Image: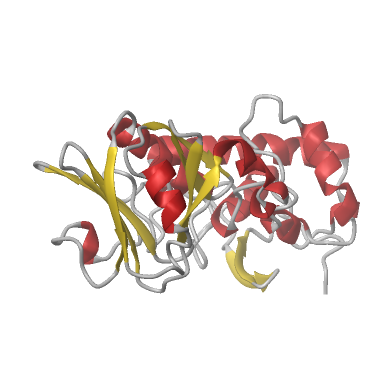
Length: 294
């Protein structure tokens, strides 16, 4: 599943490509991928104008001038591919659908624009979806209501992070960072990287963290996410950026997928273990084990 930087990269690309376009039609193959009534589609999607593209956590929202929005979750294998005359932009699971003729067998939804361009939603495993909702009620969708704050918002302070972690005292800090109700958009890659930057062992219980630890983690998390967005997201095998190119962040990663390599800070060999149900990378010298969960 994409993390905050990957979805932000997609959002920025689509903002440039489809804002201002008018929808002339839509085609879909299954209600699982496009769970909307045809009355809503006819009244609020067809003939609408795209006014904005937004991100919340790991989800995208395409706002329409009809007062409705398309809320999109790509899940694990989703793609958004924009095609116009001599233009091919894609984002998502890097299969040949990004460059081959569309629609293909993985195409679930096709949005047609009046200028002849199209936006394809492809999804091999059919876990992703596009849902129409009244724009004013989008924040009230249960999925969004449960999300924690956006870590890159200007008013997200280290005190806010401390407050969000307060109810997870006996949880490992790695598990707490992966919990989308604590903080939105952070996944495995950026949890490992931010904890390395803060010199915190991933298995440390939240209750064992001092204010100084949380301050370092807050700064590290923001630095890691910002750098990754600047680099176009990770080069994890499931994601490319909005121009159909792989992001470059993992080329600069310090611990993620660097097991058995020297730590760039101290030279100690990086270890990979399993924590919070996920592969976890850390430096045993820089990130000292204390109050680790068993």
